[in-house]
View 1 (cartoon, rainbow, N blue to C red):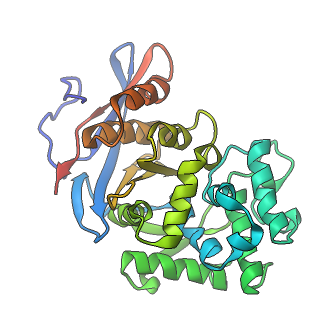
View 2 (view 1 turned 90 degrees about the vertical axis):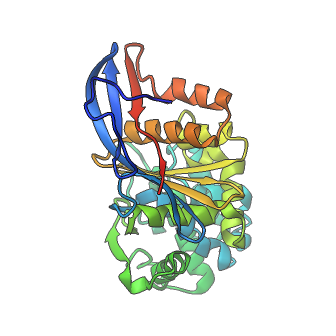
Length: 324
């Protein structure tokens, strides 16, 4: 557990104080990041926090498992015959490898759709939209539209029946009116939502609880095929591999990281104010240790990979979750 350092003033901390991640170069502090974190249960109660649980941010790619619920509930996933691998790629922010592109293609093939119908961009240096990290989500969107006889050409528009159904499902999980949710376009062209950090944690409490069949099926697929959710040596994949089926991990851009404690109805959400990916990974490992959600051996492996970017550099975290 990280301890307050005299190099960073203000050693007295409370639940209202954000966490602080520092990068040290040969033991000398060089950079730091402010980070908010919250743990909620399925009823939306804030159990523990560091910083502001009402911190607003776009949920970005951490929304993908909930966008994929339509793929399951509509029957499109079963029609495609995609199995758990297809469900995992629908939730993925993948590395764009041939294996990832192949799984996204299988979703399209099973739904009798064409690659050209994908509206996610071709990534820089790539040759096909299948290589885009969101191609699985977009393929699942299209398959859902085909199953429900919804228009294919406008599937990314916020007023499209698919996107309205996603909005409705998320609002139901959060127990808020759908009209209160703020929608904006993500970088892949799909809608994303601005949520409070506690609302993100509530979504992930539902994801890992096993109480809702569609979410339970998606969470099981993510745990069965973590290599498809992100990729080799990527944080979400490695954490789920070393978590022995106990933790679901899904990040989003601009410093968003969400986690579920499987079977316990607990969700955690993390937001780095400056959007740093290295800081969200450091905080996730720090809090997983505090909550005892991973084994010491698993944590040690992850720390070595993600907290030591070079032999002379190390990330450490100041502060901890406190009961609300």
